[in-house]
Image 1 (cartoon, rainbow, N blue to C red):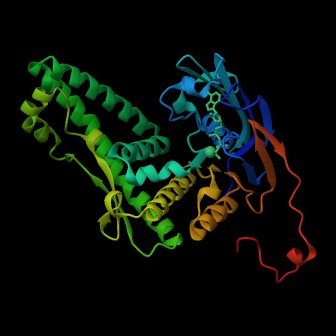
Image 2: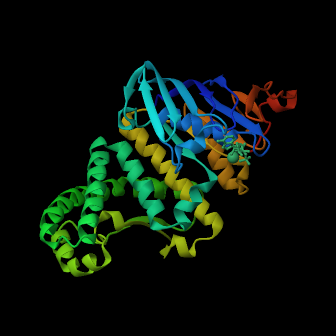
Image 3: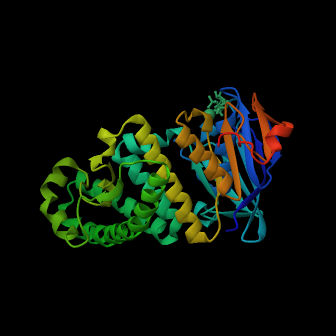
Length: 367
Ligand SMILES: Nc1ncnc2c1ncn2[C@@H]1O[C@H](COP(=O)(O)OP(=O)(O)OP(=O)(O)O)[C@@H](O)[C@H]1O
Ligand SMILES: [Mg+2]
């Protein structure tokens, strides 16, 4: 399968990165350097330029301290055509352009990149809202309609909450109708998507060598069939609390390992394996949906001490048309290696191999 190709990335005033334009070959680019060098920032900038997405709470965080605005640009090839995606950041605003024309986030290609990072374990051990965000973000990328319905639903919940707080009981049937319609769409879409997501995550979990079965399911606060009734049933409670407590904004993507809830029973390492399985499922789903492989961004492969998971990450990077892999040590087998230091990235000479390394019966590093 063909893939999205990030030809080059330019940044200006982005976190600690020195102004730069970096070119990326096909295959694996390894980025290594000491803590605080800017490796994660580089991947974050690449992910932002490729997808328009960022999960920071305040966009100002991304702007270099002391500067007013930041800018990232990706020159990429997707589906055989070249395009330039630009993101300008400043004072809580984000401006996106594709080939010089202003667009909204939803208008950017939605399958361009997948980002795997150590913090992904939070998906397993964190709150339901983190898992819900993972699911919503993924489904929004798979379907523009889902993204649209979700935005409408969230807006409706806020407006309904305001009406609940001001005791507007007479207006509730109007909000309830809107909520049921949008919420039902969301529940049905999630149920459909979960079938394939589960299959892919289970496959990845097995490929990671886990002997315990991973299962994904939705913990729903209501169902499409009973939503309207459930809302009526909890009307008094909702008026008292001033908030909507029934609906897909309260649901959880439940993860179980060997039949037990992973958030409570999985070990740290098992949690990392599950998170990795979810990310590989994301990669596969986006590939299936868009017919090309996203650019794979792997942050801090060297933080992965477990040999099976480390090999899995490096194999995954080698299996896609393009990947950028960071670490405090060099990633083996990279087509290009960049040394990161104080926000700058300099190409390193290729690792030289001794004649024994090249003989047919020699062992590959890490094999
Ligand atoms: N807005 C900002 N302006 C200036 N510097 C920033 C900004 N945001 C973050 N930094 C700095 O960027 C530096 C590099 O961070 P980054 O997370 O990219 O390092 P890293 O190479 O991934 O390190 P590690 O190996 O520890 O993960 C940090 O020292 C951080 O303080
Ligand atoms: Mg880092």
